[in-house]
Image 1 (cartoon, helix red, strand yellow):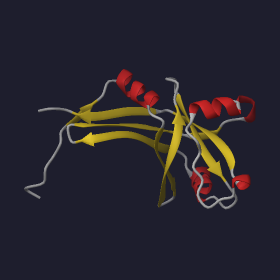
Image 2 (cartoon, one colour; image 1 turned 120 degrees about the horizontal axis):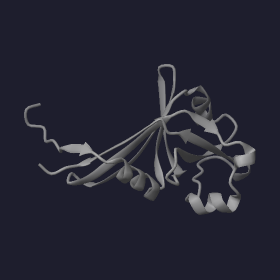
Image 3 (cartoon, helix red, strand yellow; image 1 turned 30 degrees about the vertical axis):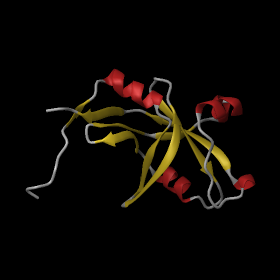
Length: 147
C-alpha cells in the first residue's frame, strides 16, 4: 500500500468536542453481546453535561433492545465529513441506563430535542419510545489538520 492517500488528523480540545456533540442531533450507537456487535443510527440530545440522552424505538422482538440489555459499555460516534480537508468525529463511551419514569422528559421536550423518530416495518401503535442515558466515561474527538 505504498500509494494509498492519507489525511492527517489531530485531537480536538474538550470544549470544541462538547460544542460539536451539542450541535449535532444524530450519531451511531455501537453495542455488543459477547463476540457479536450491533451498530444503529440514532438521534441524541446533549446539553453539555456528563451524559447523552438517546432515543430509541422499542417494539416486540427488537434486536437492538436485546443488544442494549447485553452491553456493559457502549460507544456513540458523531461525525462530519464534507471532504478530506473538512472532517471531524466525536466518540463517547460509557454505560447505558434507561431513564427512570420519574426523570423522563415530557413528550413536548422529546419532540423539541429530537428529530421525528424513524420507523420501518413496525406498526406505530406497537412502537414504544425508550430513552436511555449514556453516562460519559470517555469523550474524545479528532479533526482534519493541515500539514
